[in-house]
Image 1 (cartoon, rainbow, N blue to C red):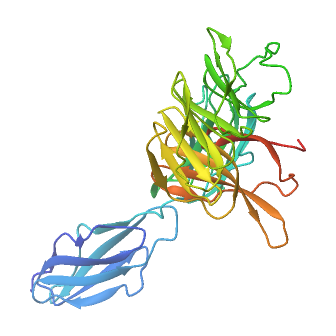
Image 2: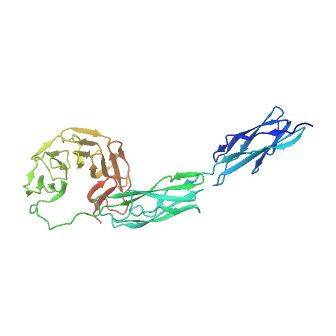
Length: 408
């Protein structure tokens, strides 16, 4: 009597596949067999399949389609061998595991992208797929924040209470989401940002008059709590304040018209302009007239910050910076437009309020930003309801500016 076939352990290479599917090769050693049949559970196209195995090896290829579910799928391959002595089944099948579809998470949205310094409740939301657990995270940290939320239905919503900002610096909260499912963990494609201004840190006391009319000090710069410089809009006068001596005596700048702008980087570096091509600098004890880097082109704006650092923009949009008021470096020019305000919260960041006037005389105001690394970038436009005349413009940071207009 012919001996029955023998069947070894079914092997599969590879034994694991991604959710995209792929091809695996099945190999089994047999004896006393002329034909072999592979079967699979769950079913696959092309199976069962019969292959020759008289050589002692049964080889077949399985094409596993992509997994469209959020659960891993395991395919079990078995072999039966037939020969003159009968039919024998494999003792141990091969298992090929296909991963679950990985989760996806869209951008995080916040129903409020800016809130007041007193705090607020914000609703976060995003869409997910193939996820069973979702967790929001926030930077900087919020005390007591718990970001876990249900998301098995395809949406992840969370209500967050943002506390009051008692500090003197604004806070930008960044919320992101991680979604976890059988196919792994992913992070939201983009976070949501909620901006919160600082608490106004100042209290005002009764005014300390500088000089009686007709002087009109409309421009002032205070780089520290103990030093200020102010310019007279009726004449070419400047005056210095120190905490130790109070307001000093006005200094008439030579050849100066009404002072349009004064800005100080420190108590030893201030720059003043009368709106022409004239510049004056303060070195800590005296004012002196300087050569304007703009040549004969009138100055449109001056802004200084600690560093020391000062920027000058002329009416052509040409930009110059300095650290000592004597050596100027040309920077990338502003895009075309009329500069109506300039502020530099740091030596690497400045912002300009630029008016673009159409052929019909209509002005559109934009807030353009400058960085020492990248030059100028166009920014948002002011609401069309604003009157195109301003009373003051200042930025505490690259993301917080205040503009006073004549109708507000």
